[in-house]
Length: 514
Image (cartoon, rainbow, N blue to C red; front, top):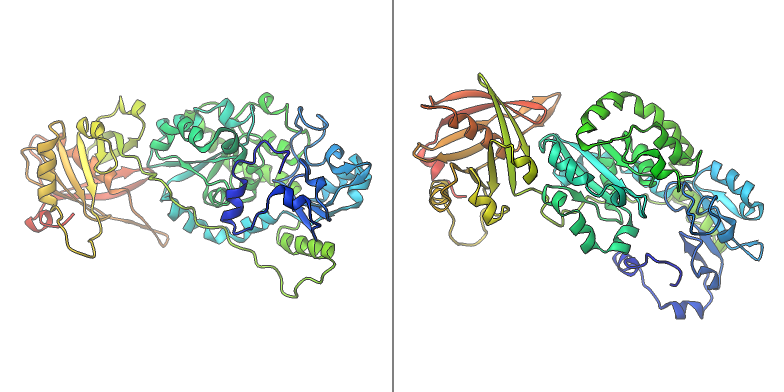
């Protein structure tokens, strides 16, 4: 269809949804019973048939100076809603305040408008019970999931602070924070997925999760603990999901497009500004207790009919078709689990350890910059590059599932011995046998078994990444001239303390297949 500069991925999105597409010229030549659209722009007025314009994002918060009427919200602009002074479509709105605003701007268009609510908001709230499943699919664990949300255009987060994602992954501990990015589909369409991955390459290598633009973005918001956003409407959905929203950009960078007095303007007005990546923990700690109440007012003014938007929309569409809707209510399709399409676990960590008595604190960073100050590098076999393993003090692998058919496999003893032969700089080679057991071999030392106990708290079970525990064991053994085993230590990973026991490894441990 003509009229859009961001239609690169439209056909693939329709194909993924199971829709059948026809050429634009063919669509122009036949009458349609109903035309449903999410935008009043482009050449849709050329089609034959009644039209219904659906809500597009969370409200009408932007005024685009190069399109339509520069001072009016895009989506409520009579320049697009009227043709020869008459409404072009029936308008489905998400909130009563939008209808009141439209009545001020264009009474004829308001007469053809109905408040049905926001179907995505209803779907988001209906999927709230899946939060733990989403976090499990993302591998979040006990970490805080921080979601960055970027709209499109020259005043977006990705345009003005493209380095923020990498700074966050570099400066904040990997075992305390996980980071994800939601990029507006127009960014992918304008720049291409290849360019977006190139821009984000250091952060992606450090574990940044890049959300799929179709549905996964909403699942990420339900999984999130905090959202850092520009003036895109994704932030309002994040606040609806119960996340505190922080502002990625100073106010003057957003005011040129943001319409004053809109829910998005009020949301960002109450949102603290994250000026640098290292400020995030302090900013969140200082404001987290007050943000929910402050941002709740903006959410209230953005979303109406939160539990009945689909029913209202269906009634409107059936009315336009002059049909009676089915008796049973519409089914609210839950949001899907995020799909891990690329490896999101870093292959190498810079590790810092602090030992006080029998207390070992481990802090890991996947950033090469942070690794400069690390006590040692820990590389995962199969994920790290050859050059990363060549310089690593610790090389480890995770036990693989047994194959259904035959084949050859290393034993833990054989693999660790071979690694120490192949990589002279390596001081410790290890195999993670299970979430609780890691067997490690140091040069000119007897093999050691590290066992970490889970933490049971209020009916929940917490476990650390065994690779972090391995780094703790390596650091403690390196500090001992003559390690006395067995020994009991307390290992702090992320925000929790775990009991760690080091004992001599048994021959049966070293014979286990990896």
